[in-house]
Image (cartoon, rainbow, N blue to C red; front, side, top):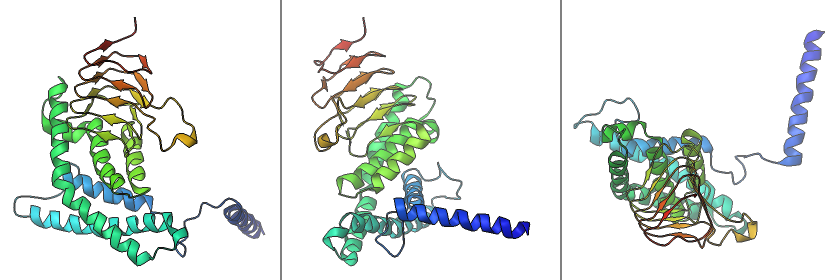
Length: 289
């Protein structure tokens, strides 16, 4: 008798859950144009990170003989899985226009291959980010230590990969990547931001970099820095809402810089715990008095 009561309770709970699906949606059904799968995107991202620094992020037996085989296997796996997920993203976004799935897949595959072709250039930039971290942090004992353990570098690496996809018109997937990095590092970099070379985030926890932010070369920021918008109104989504940080700027902990018209001039230093909503001329040291 108790078993029947238990089963009836479970059946009722299942029915209520199914009813909530009908009422509120939120289901990624395979027979429809379904949304990209988060776990698949994260798997691709991990493989891309392994491709950037082989042997650093996962225990694998590689040497000069096996490196080509391991790299080729990884590249083919990335292209296959990423193409499928980009195809889903494109088909989902343009489904109202009735674009053929085959066309979406060809475009997705071209974009996945383009990312692979861009890896040497992305690696060049990330190596410069590593150098900036090593040179800018007295606590860093080697570049390898930065690669293995610095959350700022992980966030920047994911950003540079996601930004390429974002700049090439891939929806959804770059944001999944950046939010995964955010959950791991506490650093929130929107993939739409533009960031120059030799970028260093020290410590990193609580850093926020908005979508329309423009950051130059040789910029260094500390934990808790927000490069945000003065207004979060939805109608401003296509406007420049976030600040411009020119070359050679240092921004210390917990500084908040807001607004699309705000420019921090080249070579400036922004002190900790400051609130900046107006442009700062080049070479300025700005701090709370």
